[in-house]
Image (cartoon, rainbow, N blue to C red; front, top):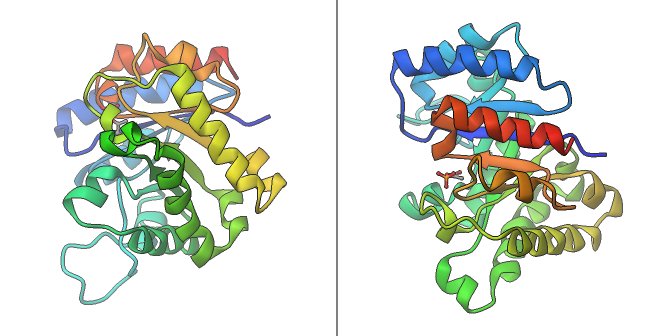
Amino acid sequence: MRTPVVMGNWKLNGTKATVADLIKTFAGVANDAANVDVAICAPALYIGQVESLATGSKLKWGSEDCDVHTTGAFTGELSPSMLKNEFNCTYAIVGHSERRGYHAETNEVVAAKFKAAQDNGLVPVLCIGESEAEFDAGKTLDVCKAEIKAVIDLCGIDAFKNAIIAYEPIWAIGTGKTATPEIAQNTHKGIREFLKTFSAEVADGVRILYGGSCNAKTAPELFSQADIDGGLIGGASLKAPDFTAIIEAAKANA
Ligand code: PEP
C-alpha cells in the first residue's frame, strides 16, 4: 500500500504574512492526516520561515529546485546540502516544466539535479509530462519514458525507491484544464508498466502524483484511480480551504 502524498508547489508566490498564515493552517491539517504525507515546497527565501513554523508538526517542506553543486563559485544557486542540513528540507522538486521551459533544463540536467538531491539526503520529486502538441500527437508516454530513462541511466532504477514522480501534463498546469481521471490514470499506469520493465518492486512502490490544475473539485476522482498516489498542487496550495479539501480527498483514498 502506497501512502498518498499531497504536496504544494508555491512557485514564485507569497509574502511572509501569507506564509505564516498558510503554514500554521497546514501544520494543523497535516497533523490530522495520519495516513497522508503532506508537504509544501516554497520559494527559497521562505524555506527558513517554513522550517520555523512547521517544525514539530507532521507537515514536511522542500524546495522547488536545487543545483547539482553543494558549494562553491555558483552565484545564485540553491545547494542541496544546505537545503537538507541547514533547513531540514525533506523534498526537492526537480524538472518542473517551468524550469525545463524557462531555464532550458534538459533531461540530463534534471537527472543530475535528481542525483545531487538524493546524494545529499533529499527526496527528489521528479516532474515529467508532455506539451499539448505532444499530447495531440499521442506522444505522452514517449516523453514521460525519456524523462524517466535519463534518471535511470544516471542513477539506476533503485534510485526510485526513495523518490517521487509527479506526472504533470504541461497543458494542464495553471490552465484550469485538469486531465480527466481516465487520461491521468492511463498515463500513470503506463509509467508504472515502464518502470516494471526495470524492476517490479520499484514500479509497485514508487508514488506517482498527478499535477495540473488539480483542485478541491477534481481531486476526489483523480485520487481514487489505482495508479494515482496523490497530487502536486500549484495554485490551489495557496488557498487554505482548497488545499485542505485536497488533503481530505487523499485521506479518503489512503
Ligand atoms: C504545478 O505547477 O506543479 C502545478 C500543478 O500547478 P497548478 O496546480 O497551478 O496547475
